[in-house]
Image 1 (cartoon, rainbow, N blue to C red):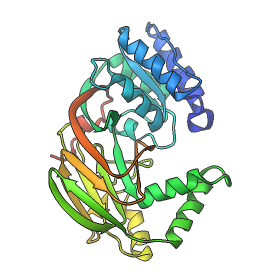
Image 2: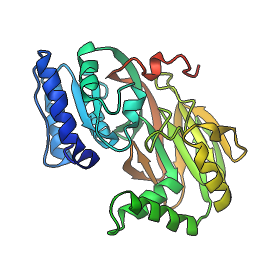
Image 3: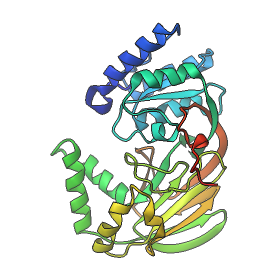
Length: 296
């Protein structure tokens, strides 16, 4: 299942290499490349219904999210050959980001792990759901016709910083409610989003719980100072950040939108449920489940 536009055309190159490697090793491969996401999802669901041995998503986190909608709660395993910009699901399951042949070999090796998923209504996600400053930046960037590429997001971030404000959230964690002023609320099934930012560094993808990170930074300067700590996950030690664990999260804030797996999910309010073992993933040797430093 390929997104030909992933990584500015990298998806096609990665798909070609993956298919060639699988066929070289004797695997029967059927390719899925719909003209629209809906058409691709219909083809993927049809393949799952008719008994495919595995669904391989060749693309970024957005395509992985689309593939999840076909395989969640089935016995069909999901594999990934990363070709996008974020590739946080690939990080989670230990797939090399720049080696399509190695990604194909992980499919052949057939190392299976059960993975929890987050569910919002009837839609699934695997990594992180977020709402706040980051979703405001994405919403603004998506509405801009110029410029294109990464600079669009940099400009959108500067514009949102110029009108920085905290957001009044109602947060409910496993039935316990509170009203808070926050900059960002994230719900992590996995630890990272946005291309390796460890926003929920303690998240474990098979423990039946989300890690919830709440950033309360109350000024532009405090938010900017916090930003460099996100990739290492050390922000959770700062006084502006608090963390929680819960199996069910409800979020509400006026005018806010939730993004998950890099995709626009839904306006708030939203209920997010952790569903244990909702999908089987084919993993590499550095998957979350095999890391010596995995949180306990």
